Image (cartoon, each protein chain N blue to C red):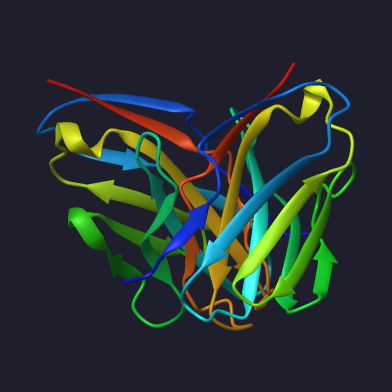
Length: 114
Length: 113
């Protein structure tokens, strides 16, 4: 059974803190993605990775960085959290490059920055 | 650039009534189209997808969608909804085989008893 796990369901941080969101998959998928989800805005792509140590910017990368040192783990990093980064963060994986492969999503991390 | 519009932010409906959630895209080239569902406090789950072939696509949980190229639409339908269908529904499009899909803003389906 497909499994994408995210380290926390809920997270509260203070402005200026460095924040790590972790995503782990057990499906040996090549591709991993980080989205943020905001009411009325849908899902917006922050970063994606198509291989270990490889990353590409998505639509809204500003204020974020990522790390993929191992195939199964993709981390999203907020170097200095700000209140406008309060959001739901969703991780997703996909087996290959083809858009026809199914994307699998984790349960999400709801981050609040105070 | 590919874009997708979900015309309704919220759709209230009574249980056992039919429902249609609308999705339009803007593209003049070939597209792949997807519908995802997000139940409360969960991640997204693929409902169905159109890649090629028959324009009527059947998905899980009794949902279906019809690809209409002339109308650039991919509306989602279910003939009789259940309380358990209450969720957020997202339409997504990939234009010309783009590696990354673009998601719509979502439609909240609220099923009342």
